[in-house]
Each structure stands twice: as structure tokens, then as C-alpha cells.
Amino acid sequence: MHDGAMQKLKVIYDTDPGVDDAMALLLLARHPDVDLIGVTTMFGNADIATTTRNALFLKQRFGFAAPVAQGAGAPLVGEPDAPPTFVHGMNGLGDIMLPAITEAADPRHAHQLIIELVRANPGVVTIIAVGRMTNLERAMREAPDIVPLVKQIVVMGGAFGRNGHTGNVTPVAEANIWGDPDAADLVFGAAWPVAIAPLDVTQATIMTEAYLQQLGDTAGSDGAFVRAISAFYQNFHRESAGLDGFYVHDSSAVALALHPEFYTTETGAVRVVTEGIAIGQTIIKPDGKNFPPGPWDGRPSQTIATGVDAEAVLAFYRDTLVGSA
Image 1: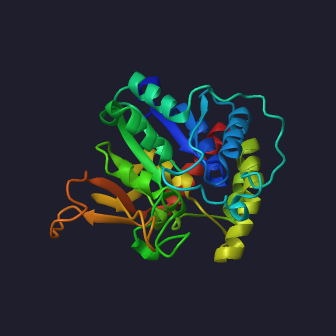
Image 2 (image 1 turned 135 degrees about the vertical axis):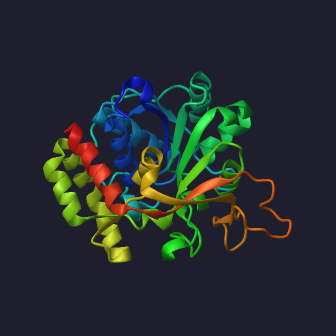
């Protein structure tokens, strides 16, 4: 894909930085085949003011030109949940010291930036969405005309029970979907192509201590930065899951967007449970399986990743950073 700028993948990154969000944004900022045209923020790993400040810090640190627009501070229904400071630290970036922020947020609201960028680039924008689906739902509701204009939405979220991977905030629900299940159900039911990287594949992809050490040694200041922001996050995974390293969540969505061949996939209508004890659960009705009439009928067929070549994903991350060091 190195035959000139025409081949670059135009990406809007919808995010709640977050340690793994920052690592995926670094991947997008450094990848030669990515044209990052917008970054939109929402609540999640921290409150909306903090995730937006973090995105502006990352713009400053990584030196990308794309505008950063602040988005949703709460889900469609109810109040935002308390930020998981025990995972990402009090400042959302593993409690590293942050300098004064000199970058300013775009005056547009996130959903407005999404609408304008998609309309200006019909048929070629991939939205990589690694937080709640709140901004996408609002963009789609206010401008239904953008749905057929989006090339693809690639989501980090959900859990489908493949490979023994179920939820991480409840036995069945993953945090991004659980954080705004109503928005997720609407986004997955819209007629744009959605590809999902769920816990089924992200938890099968692990950056070990040895991997991180090598990244720190070979990927210059970017490698050192990943080491610094991920130390707190790594400690959480060690204590919570006994891992020597951490799961590669958000960067898996970038890998799925750029290298779908790293993944095995299934297709079908996807629903999100929006109330009761299984709230936030993602359930696929596989294409070709017939059931009596029900809530999956009339929904578009979307794609979920169910298997991964984890070594390929890890090499892709390392090679991208080392190549730009």
C-alpha cells in the first residue's frame, strides 16, 4: 500500500484516552498508510474534560495535525459511570507527569466534526471507535445521510464468548459497550459496515514485559513513551489477571482496520442488551442460522473478529514504531 498518498486510509479516531487509547493513537500517527483526519473524544477511561486534555497532550507529543474535538460526557441514558482510575491512573495516562497543554480543542463538537469530515470525504473514511458509541450515535441521528458515506467503522468493544473470553465489567459485558449500551445497539444496527475487535481477540493479544522492554530499546522516544504510560496499566493487569504484560485492546482495532488478514471473522446481526442483569452484552446471530422471528431480524450483517494471529499484530505494532524512530 505504499503507492502514494491516494492509497492512504483516511481515519477518524473516536477515543477516551486512556493508556491503550494513547498507544493506538501513536500507531495511527506513525503509520505511513494512515491519514489521520480527526480525533474525537468521549467520557470513559476518564471524564470528558480529562480525556480531551489527554488527546490534546497526545497531539502535542506525537505532532499530528488532525483536529481534536470534544464529544459526549455522558451516555444516551443515565449518568456516566465513575472513571476506572485503578486501571488508567488518576490522570488517565498512567499518572505520568503532563506538561502544560498548548494545543486547543476544535470549536466543533465531536459529532459535528465527524459529520463534516465524512461529508467532505464520501466513501473513504474509516472511523476507528475505541470507546463508547455515544458520538457515533449522535452523528448518525443528526445526519442520517452520513451512514452510507462511511467506508467502515472498526470498533474495539464487546465480548462474544469465543476462546473463553467473556466480559470484563460484568460476566458478559465489555466496558466500552456497557458504558453506553443504547448507543452501541443503535450503531451496530445502522447500515454502515461495522467490524468489531472484541475481547475475544484483544485478550488473546498480550504485550509482555520482554516485548515492552524491546520496544523501549528499539523504538526511540516513542518506545520510551509507551514504556512510561503503560507501567501503571501493566501493574493493574499483573494484580487483576496475573499477567506478565497487558492485553492489547485499542491497537487491535487499528490492526483490524489495516490488516484484516490477521483475523478470522464471523458475520451476522449484532444486538446489545440494554437492560437487566446482562446489560451491555453483545450477541451475534450468525448469518445462515435460522431462528423464529425475533429482535435480530431486519438488522444489517456486521463482522466480528473471533480469532487472531497475535504475533502478527505485535510485530505490526513494533515495526510501525521502529520504522518511524
